[in-house]
Structures are given as C-alpha cells and as structure tokens.
Image (cartoon, rainbow, N blue to C red):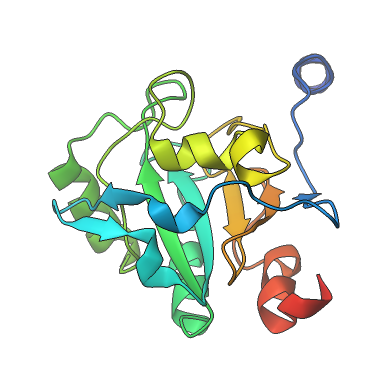
Length: 195
C-alpha cells in the first residue's frame, strides 16, 4: 500500500510542478538565438578560463552535475558519449549544489571523485549555480528565450541537459531521466541535419 501512496505523491508532484520526466523539448523550426553563445566563457574546475568559441563547429551538451544524486551514475555514460563522439560533440559538466545540497564538495573533491569513480575526462566548470538569480551566465543564456530564441526552462533537477548545435543554436532540452547514451540524444549526433 505504501508504494502506491509514494507513486501517487510523485505523480502529483509531476503534475503540479510541471516536471517533465521523459522526452525532450525541441527548438521550434523558425527560432533563432538573439545573442551568440560563443561570447560566453567559464572557469574550468582546475581554474582555467575556457571560451565557448573553442567549441565552434561541434555540438555542446551542457549538464548540471552532482556527486550525491540518484542520477550521479550518468557520469559514466556522459564520458562514454564524449569518447564515442568527440569529433562531433563536447560534453560540459557544471557542478551545482542547487538541488537538495547534492554537490557539497569543493572543486578539488569534485574533480577527484569524477576522475577516480567514473574516469571523467570531459571538461568541467568550477562549482557554480544553474538556477535563480545567481546562475552562471551560460545558464542564463540557456534558460532565457530573449537570448537563446525559444527556451525559458531552468533545470528542474541535477543532470538536466541542454544541447546546442554546431552553429551555436539551442536545439533541445532533455530532463534528468534522459540517459546520455539514449537514442534521443545520440540521434542528433548520427544525423544532426535531420533534427
């Protein structure tokens, strides 16, 4: 009986809060960004400044990550995606403590955890925020349709994913439950012009 009550509560939260668990939100056909994402940069987890212009002509998958979340094992598939398609995509991890304090570590602790536990080699930013008034400027672009042309959706939880195409256009937004190696994401890499 308890499991049915829990399921009812979860479904109610999904309905009330508008959480999208599966699927993706795709860019409307005529939407176009009003400000280039390539003008932004971030500080890597080891303190280096990285401009997004370094990733022109590649897709970019932005993911807000956390070390103590039920979705943390997605680090493994994020690394697999990065290794398998590194000629087409770069994965960028943004550690954030925004959701139930599930990223409490320092930059050094996060980097060590990711490397030793999941063998992460894809670029990671220093610990930041991805929601609210203090969110990183890249996440401000990803979640403001007056900048990206169509999307206002902030991350709802850790491991929310934003896909930017080779031309710097926000193409799709995926909820946390979408696995990095799912066909929903990989399809963009196999045939990006058909999306």
